[in-house]
Image (cartoon, rainbow, N blue to C red; front, side):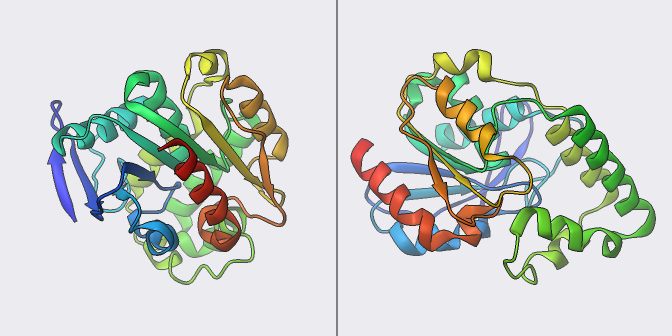
Length: 259
């Protein structure tokens, strides 16, 4: 792992997997970290310079106060600055997709292509946000064992969660509140999606328990250069991990076509 410190003092941890090809930023899901991308690094890491970032409040990147996904998009752009990379494609799953879209809105000239999985362009539904807030407080008050199984089901479907649940259980209460607040209080971007001029691939699992396929349909329809929506039959919310064998051919074809 390497780190940079942004202009406003935020430390950001990342892994530059190297490679001689075009740069591709990998942005993980809520509660996850850079190791989520192991299937993609193995599949096409030799063809691209893959740069996986621990997003604010996740992995080895701290969160010292409230933040939003615009802040995290700025963190990712700062990593590119530090590495001397002018432009890059971005691939993000769930939360990573929220951040990827905001990168494209903050610096459209720097984002050459965008692939988002299990992502919505809308703010969190108020009732769902309230349920997530309640889940967070139960987690903190009663311990992670009370909610980790339900969280794994939402995020991973039937995928084995054993690699991840110990990491989730170790998240400190203050950090959990900060990252949860960023998730449930995010703003919508559908009204600005028309500003994104890069080609976009939207993938979504038919068994996504966090966002129905209709959310992905709305996002793809709002993006001027989006390809037709790709649905992965039985795909869970974190489908780049849980259904990597189904997802990777679509990512490889898309990146090859646009980089």
